[in-house]
Image (cartoon, rainbow, N blue to C red; front, top):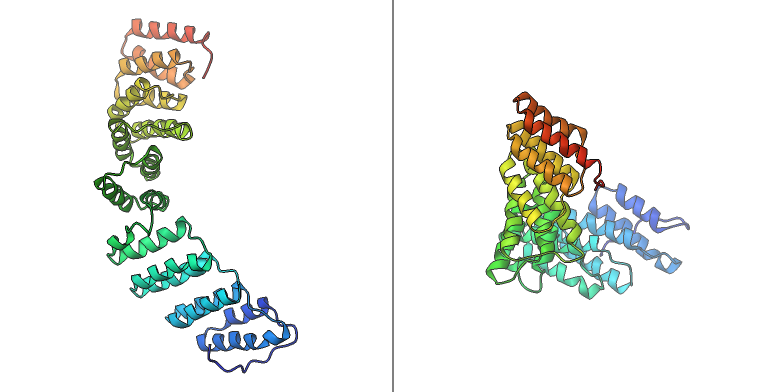
Length: 326
């Protein structure tokens, strides 16, 4: 890289030793000197590996010496050294740090030339840089990233606002999201306890005629149950009950935890008839309510001196002894 080789090595020079010395050197130019001095030992059998190259590139970009960093990247290719995705991304992030998003995109596109296939991680990293620099049009070019990959990645990182913006653009272009994409967004809302928003997207799926396939059906069922329980816990029992009815009408299995959450929620609100109805449907579906669920409903009726309703519920309990548990 243009520095004079003034560093003296022992006969036992190894990549790990070179890496150790470069890492310990805070002065970038002295680190370059160590790297170039090691290069001079090629005649004695020494070869830089991806660790020493990667570390030196990291040192260079930390001081904004981008040209030298990319020269090392080209050397890695010439010397058939393994080039990892993280090395490319370190350069992309460095360009983003100094507000040069187009250079970040340029380096991103070089990955294919280096036989380094970009993963979802690469797309999301570059997309984040472009969004930060108000370059969304570039981010959504066809050759940059697919909508689905982008939304999946954004949801995984908890960036729901950005994911929804991309979803809206996708719809405006006449592209229909599939069930898997919706599930990713809904699951993202559940992760941050926004169950009302999650329920809205479940409704949107139904209205749009979007159904899961065999592979995503179990996830579909799990998320429905999770949203209903979340709505009960977060004080929206009416919304939870609407979703529960939708599940029953569409043949989506309701687990014992969801039944118990609904019953407990309506008992606390004093809506004992609705709680009793859910218990009846629970037994019909082959689920045996937990002892606490029975006690909550029966106790509620007794407290209100509604002996007949309590007696009928006890009869249902006796009948459930003959029903196989879920």
